Length: 138
Image (tube, one colour):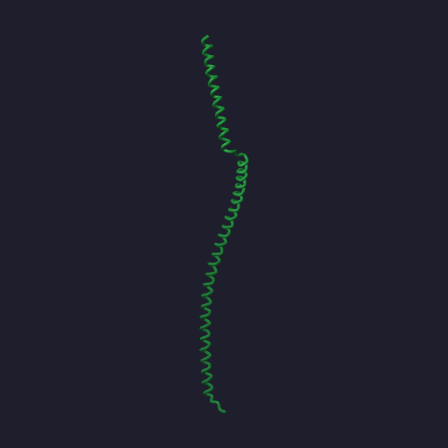
């Protein structure tokens, strides 16, 4: 069995060249993957920074919204207390109010009485004037 050394050397040389080419392709692909990884990492860091800034803005907005909501609850409680006092005042007015017709009749009766008193007062004034004239005369 005779192996030809030249054939073996040629096969080994071919295999060496093929391994070297495969190795170079592997290194090139690894460099591309590494470059893509670095680019992606840079983009991810930028996105992370943007997300972090957005979260800070949203946290500030949330804090402001909570403060406004708290203020609205305080105002609502004050308004509810005022409404309760208004309801009490309305209830009090409902209890003391009278019928409008009855009120107008009473006012008319008082006006009539006051007119009668004015007539009496006018008569007394005229009588006093006549007495004064009589006293001055005599």
